[in-house]
Image (cartoon, rainbow, N blue to C red; front, side):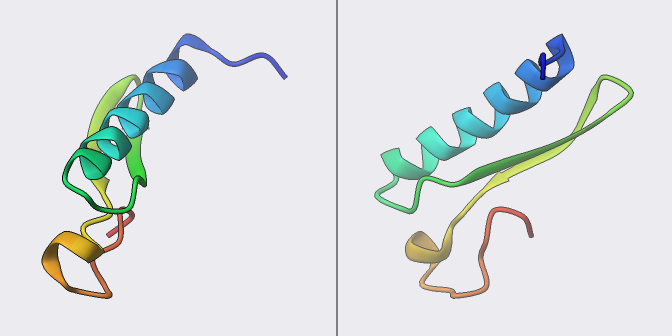
Length: 59
């Protein structure tokens, strides 16, 4: 399967969030949501940083 330019942008955005989470001594998990080429949202797992078991990247 060949990835599109949009796929690469999405993975890069999620990876940037994961790296930020690792830099904050948290779990290195990131997520991004794109539609029609626009970034709608992104986030990272903040469970460790916030001490909150519900603070997942996909929330």
